[in-house]
Length: 155
Image 1 (cartoon, rainbow, N blue to C red):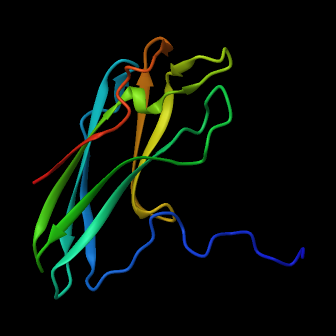
Image 2: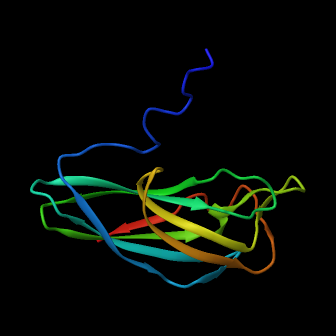
């Protein structure tokens, strides 16, 4: 039984459609944001195919140097974007620092300062744009009332 491949058949978030999309014009509000603040990340999604289609833009968090071992990536937001052929849509995620929180060494949920990457992709294995940002300020303890998701706007 040792010859079985344990990897999944498809990466998380994988899917197929009948058209193609191009992603461009990545913009991040700022390079740094506070442990009690937020940062905006936006991009343009264009239907480059010949049919109407839907693209699911997924936002992942990568924390390369946390105080404890963390998952390589964590899904923190997504947007289902419908577009006609040739149509461009602007997608904006408002990312609160609290979505970067984790259970720290003292067994409390914290937002830790440091460098992180916000990765935008069509699946966990198809990352198309990356935005490095830095969380600054003191380590912040958060509780059950923290914001747990990113707000999404599609225009």
